[in-house]
Length: 64
Image (cartoon, rainbow, N blue to C red):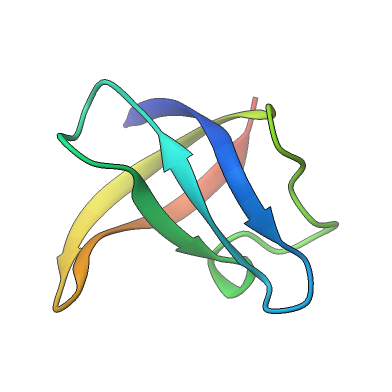
């Protein structure tokens, strides 16, 4: 699993981006992949990276 920090979160849209050293660019996530309360900017998480049509996407997101 990769480790990262929530770099941006849009609570209206329920999506955001994760900063990680495990990918060349920020990784997209959607709250449907997280469950529970919204993530907060700066929060540390673990996740898997899959290649989606628009770029890397986080799956199996777990709060640390």
